[in-house]
Amino acid sequence: MVSFFCFENYFQAVDEDVIKEVTWGSGNYREKALLLWDLENIPYSHLPKVKQSLKFAPERSFIISTQTINPSKLKSIHREGFEVLRAHKSDSDEKIKSVYRILKEYDEFIFISSDSDFVDIGKKILSERKKLTWIMQDANKKRIAMKMNLCDKNLKLITLSKFEL
Image (cartoon, rainbow, N blue to C red):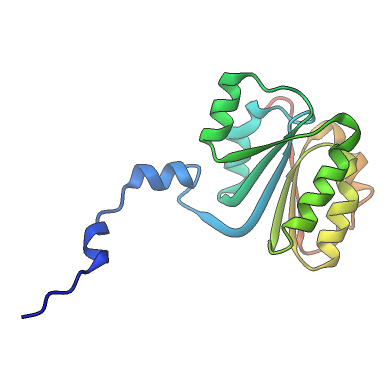
C-alpha cells in the first residue's frame, strides 16, 4: 500500500492568537491594501483608534518619519507589522511618491496624515479608481478636504479628535 504525504494534516489547528496578532485583533486582513503613516503629523499613540476605525489589517504598512524613533517604540512598530521609511525633511514627499510608483499593484491605500502634501498622490490614486481611506486629525481636516473631491465614491475620510486617545 502506498502512503502519500498530506501537508494539510499538519496544520489543521489554527492558532487564534496568531490570527488576532496578524489582523490587529479584527480577524480581517485585506490583501492589496497599503497603509502609509506620516509619524510627524499623527502620533503613534493613535494606533488603537486607527485599528478600531479601519476594522481590518492591511497587507503592507509603512511608517514614514524624518525623526529618529526610540528603540522601544521601534520595537512596538515592528511588532505591529510596520516597515519604517526614514526620510530627510527635504525628500519625504519624493519618498512617498516613489512608494506609490513602486507599489502600483495595490488596489487600496490608507493614509494616516494631516499633511496636505499627500493630496497630489491621493488624487492620482482616485483617478485610477483605487480606494483611498484618509485618516487625519480633526484640526487639519478642512485644509485637506478642500483639495479633494469629496464626492468620489472611492474616498473615505476619517477624523481623529484630539480628545480620542
